[in-house]
Image (cartoon, rainbow, N blue to C red; front, side, top):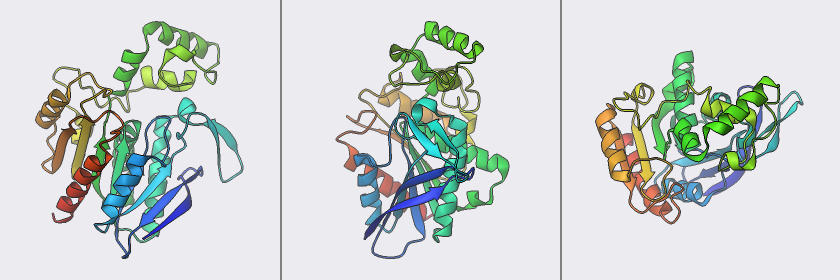
Amino acid sequence: MSEEIIKLNATDGVKLDGYLIKGKHKSKRILIEIHGMTSNCFKKRETIIAETVKNHGIDTICVNTRGSEIIKYIKYNDGRKILAGSAYEDIKESYYDILGVIRYAIDLGYSSIYLQGHSLGATKITYAYTKMRENKDKEIENIKGILLLSLVDLPDVFEMYSNNEYLLYAEEKEKAGEIMTMMPQEAFIHPISIKTYLQYRKYNSEFNFAQYSKEGYKFDTINSIDIPLFMRWGNNKELIRNSGEKQVALMRRAIQNKTSDINYIDGADHTYDGREVELANEINNFLEKINKI
């Protein structure tokens, strides 16, 4: 078994880092883990998942995207340096990060790639996979499974934790050309810029594909995923309005993927704190099952 810090590039030239965990034997299968909002790749949950699948012949890359942490500078290969982190994130740029990691894994010799995202990371995985299909990126043939952990209805989260007064405030700041300034502290549960706040609340049509509370919603984007699909939520302090039971029942009815595995983990919260081993075992069982298909 080996662990190493890695350096790689997003496809638009942004420099990224993360870690690679490999088992004792050379593998062609790898799990790519994408973290959520304000987070990073060095979380207990991701480490436990990596250690679990490693014992069954699957290596792992966990990467710090340009949206990791709250506020930071990112660097491009040409020397440019700009503000990033979750406070300044443009979710559409996740396509460049995720495709960059996939290409890095393929260059290392991996042919079967599983994409896993948690929370905002699950939104990014879904968006990037959809964009790869639209762009006919050849690397999509290497993606053998999609794992969405606590996928949220992102605009609805902002409805729950913000209000229209702050939306009006952000719109006024946008008109004044001040989108790189920060929203008031009480506007959301995390520090966030005007630019990013407006993307999540107003300019969200490209990633508003998890409308759980909209009656009769067809989930067309998620249903376009035609490879094995794993979806999990907790039922304790999750960032969705439905109970775990109702959420799973809704998605099992709505999702047409015949190789889907949709459920919740009893007692788990949004971060799966204290339920990481259970989650990791369920992920491993899913990956072993689809490897036999």
